[in-house]
Image 1 (cartoon, rainbow, N blue to C red):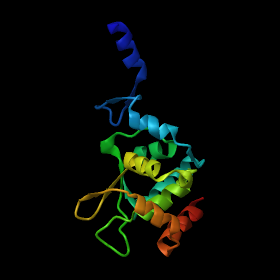
Image 2 (cartoon, one colour):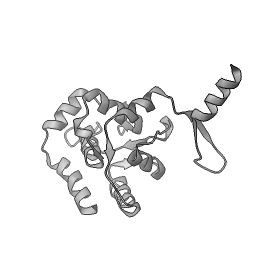
Image 3 (cartoon, rainbow, N blue to C red):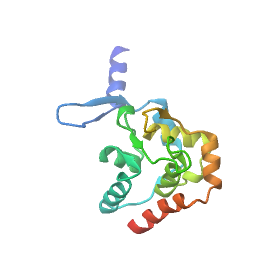
Image 4 (cartoon, rainbow, N blue to C red):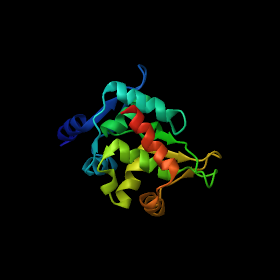
Length: 169
């Protein structure tokens, strides 16, 4: 029984090398990872040059983080919790709050079928790949109200996200 368990663990774990001196190991059968893979999402097909351009365009004002994590987001691969991207765009009406609607707009342009997810699935996806912290360092979360507001919002700051994607692609 011990041998079977050891073989199962070896086959189901995944290793990611961040730097040459560290190696992170986590299991693929993590329930959150399984839920992310079950979502009916497809990334838009991007070339390497387009991926770099999207990352550079949005990393100036909207997000910070590692390029490898951004690639994992595009490929919908699992990401360790401490390597998540940080969404830093502030709300125009409440400057002490992170603008969650621009994040949702960003993801809707990046992933095919994102608009069709239910609220709980969107929250799960965002919390897996992103950290939402305001300028004071307080972590914030996506809510169903944020999602319903985004679905009904036609503001200019959301059109700015669309125009950045149109300029790159």
